[in-house]
Every structure is written in structure tokens, then in C-alpha cells.
Length: 205
Image (tube, rainbow, N blue to C red; front, side, top):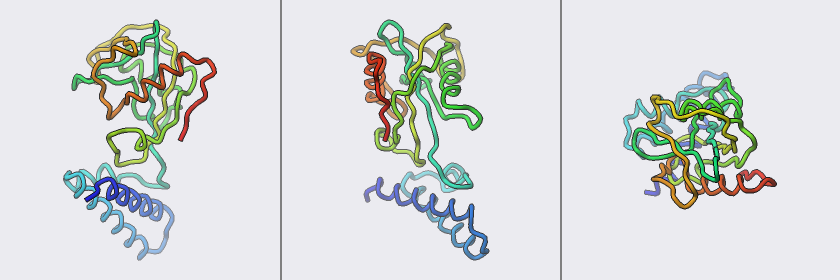
């Protein structure tokens, strides 16, 4: 079984059913699309081997028109080295996370760096807007727009928190072990290139 193909089919069924449930009025159509949504969750549970209720809670919890989720990753540089934070699993990532519903991309990027690294930064320009599932080795149940933002370090030092255990500055040829489910080596390479190029043109899918 090609799990990636089944994953895409399950996601498409979830998308179709969620959009239909947002707009259809006929009680029989609502029942049909609710069942299609359940089938998409059953398919996803079969693919991932996760409990069905857990899949429903995560995969089928949205309403309204289905749109991609947004995540930001901050590329912060100092002396030609990039800022990375170490998570509790021991792996390293660029600071970032989901965009909060009430924050802009710029404000969310700045917030994530402060929360995970204890540093104040200024978000300067966009490096890339990517379709996450096209660039990450770990595919996600949702469609995600991954936004890389080049930032200037302003002040601050690492503050212990619930998400990360350390932070550090790393040169391009001396990177620690990266969690490529969240930050890819491609992201880091793009960040170094954008930081060195004042005429950088945003890459987008």
C-alpha cells in the first residue's frame, strides 16, 4: 500500500466534507457528508495506526472552509551564525511554530523567538513561503504553509521554558543534529543564502 497516496485521498475527502458541511442545508446531504468525513478519519487511522478517536479529534475538528494551516520559522543571525534552539528530545530546530489566530506572521515570528530563545528580534523580510508537505520528509495530515522569516537579533539571552532546553549559534558547516520534521537542512541553507543576499527574492510555491 502506498501510504502517501492513501494519505492524500483521506485529506481530500476530509477537505470536501468539511467544506460541504459548512454550506449545505439539506439534512440528508449533511448526513452523507458527515459519513464521508468519518470515512476519511477511518482511513487516516488505518494509515497511521492511531486510535480512531484521536484521529477524529485532530483531523476532523475544524469547521468552515478548509484552508492550510500556517507556521513560521525564524532565521536569526549573528556573526554569520544561525540561531537554533534545542527541544526536549535533544534535537535542534529554528525557533517557530503555529501562527496564533490573533497574530500576524510578523508578530508571531517575534513571539516564537522570545518564547523559545528568550531573545528580542526584529522580523525583517520573507525568505520563503513553502508548501510544507512538498519539502519536508515527514508528511503532515493537514496542508501547511511554512513561512521562513529573516530576523535581526536585538537583545536577550536564553531563558528556560517549557519547550526548549538550550539555544546556540551555529555556522553553516558545524550544525547540530536537526529535527527535520520541523526544520529541514533546506530551510537552513535558504536562510544562510538569504542573509548573505540583500537582493534576495522570496521563494514561494
